[in-house]
Length: 187
Image (cartoon, rainbow, N blue to C red; front, side, top):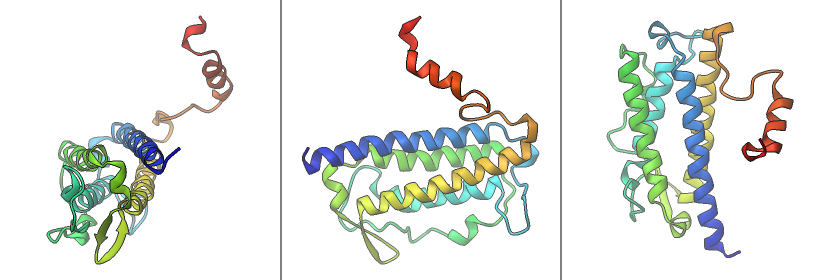
């Protein structure tokens, strides 16, 4: 397998995986009550609203300049970004926050969709630090996944027994595995 084949395979995988991470976040956010968006689990913690604000802000800053494809000299930290404001508790309602969430993810996913295998070894500067595009993508895969899992923990805690699982339900692993092994065509 050539390097370009591996790069194409990586891009295909990361596109699917990050859409999966977004779907988990979507599933958690869908379970929030209107009055829960700005709820903290601990002092100095982040509410769902703050996590959404931060993710959307980061996605716009990092990937907005590459949305149509790689461009030499693109800076991965927008000069107009106010990162500190992303962590301030605002007053936006759930609908406005969902719009921000969707918009941020659209920027990131559009960028992934427009990257070509040869782009992965090209430089992208973030706050003056040079990365390859691959390193920048990997950095954000970890970053975005971490915050989405924080969001899931927050919403799961708020929902308590009303939480609807986003994966295999407890006690259902054997049935799930059996179904996977027999497949949909075996009936």
